[in-house]
Length: 177
Image (cartoon, rainbow, N blue to C red; front, side, top):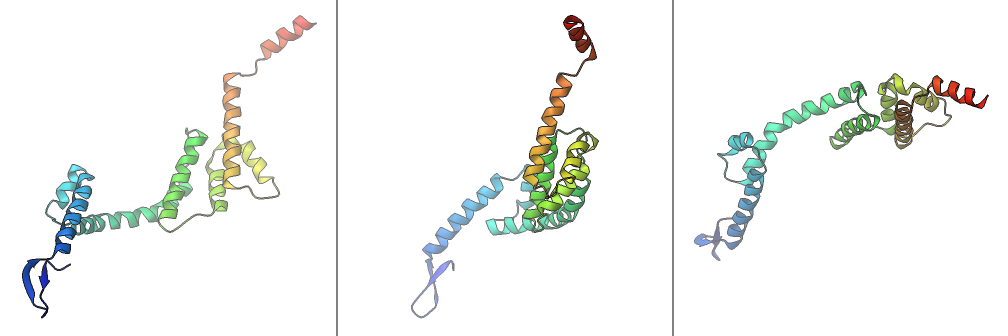
């Protein structure tokens, strides 16, 4: 709003517009919220601005190009993310996070593509699970694949904790014989 009120003839007076004063208070409140949320290094880059809009515009301009570059990188990151030493849960969280960022950026990925990427990158330890999924007549959903992989991980973990020992089998047979 205009800082000063106008008279009945449309001439600017020296009377301060009360809506302008309220707007200034709100602007300064938002201004302090923005500044309060910035790191010291970012705060120093916007210190010269005096309104919330000016600070926001400066930050938007600074980060817009980085965001565009990040959007371009996300599909490649999604396709090249391997499980490696990650647990299935951590791997799926990482994949899901990248997919969420793609969706937020306006380039959502389909469930079918996500399932395909996961099956390609989950690693040889889960080859039997992937083979059973591929043998299905109907496509599996992301949620279904997630449940199967988590179940397979639990089985693998329990096998590692209680490995099969041929010695215990021999002892059991000898005592039964």
